[in-house]
Length: 363
Picture 1 (cartoon, one colour):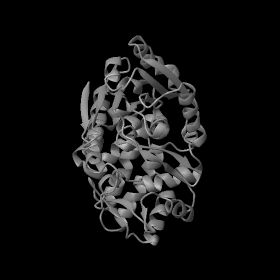
Picture 2 (cartoon, one colour):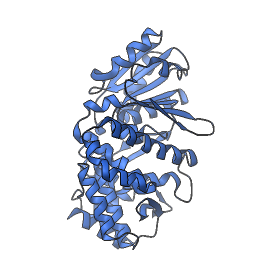
Picture 3 (tube, one colour):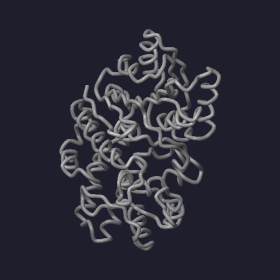
Picture 4 (tube, rainbow, N blue to C red):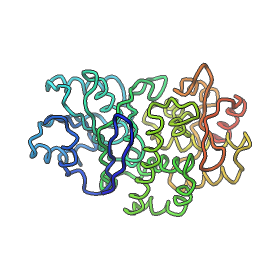
């Protein structure tokens, strides 16, 4: 087991990464405020792993409530959130009850938002079971649900007390989900860690083959990158980019997810195409060369990810992007690359260049 620290001033917590961690009731128990816990999972993950967590906790004397939700991005909405609240109220859970998210990013977002708002905030633990959740969504405290007009537009910052990433869960992960997680892994190399990007180019085949050592290294390196960024800018308020830089490709990608309907594209798939669009726009601004764009596109394709966008039309993309959370004072701020390994936020790209970049990546 490897442990990283997210060094927030008042809410610091550990990320444990390793195999055979789900049964470690001792690790979870250290972060419980009382002997009551609620495990939130979904109908796909629960049959595989819920009892591996619940049984050791019950043996240790913890009262455990189980909530099993529908699977998929389409469930990330108010109605599903109310299912969590209904169960918490029915079990008379108080402010010392710890909510444990067992699943991918959707479960983490739903359970985290539920924990942030139930009785104005209860303790929260992340147990991510997908690669994307282990390297990205479980770390940093962003929680929320979708709205028909925009992804993740309703939510709260609510830091977990612990993140427990058991790499054994990746053995049962569908290949498409593994590739989706690799999009976020590649993102870290593109925005701030060129040596990691070069390592990924040399080892992407090992990651696709689920080599345990390669996956553990990629998860740890990704989490270390994110933990450092979050520690400096927890609530994404820095004027020089800060945490916003973690959103490379997300503004374009969220437009795809919303435009085609939540769940049609996996989040990582949409982000992959979004990163291609962002690198193409960076090329049009004179920051990247054609060889750089092709290098990014090739790595994403080798990771099993799409590199051609959904045919929504540039007008639809632009309309959806106008609802992005990074829009300030009516100006769309995009995360772009000055060079590979160095991202910036930029609000001065012309509509014509953005439109041309979308078109070039959707042909």
